[in-house]
Length: 91
Image 1 (cartoon, one colour):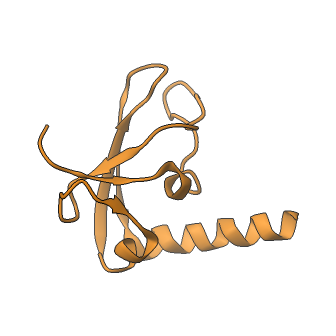
Image 2 (tube, rainbow, N blue to C red):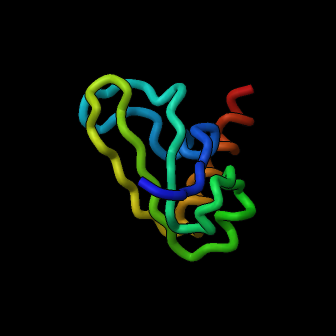
């Protein structure tokens, strides 16, 4: 498979938190990407801000389906900000 970078589920789960095929919750899944430097780096929100577009993928632990998302960074970050605001309002 080669080199890649990882994006933690703590970031991605704000946009997608269940497998679109079986509905299993993504509690312990790490997402991989080749859209960055591919140095086995853990991608941060700042790294996402520095890219226009990126692709991430994972495999569901329950049904073994391959899941790939192609995202525009500005839209992804907007969704994350809105999710964070909703969580703050619930507290």
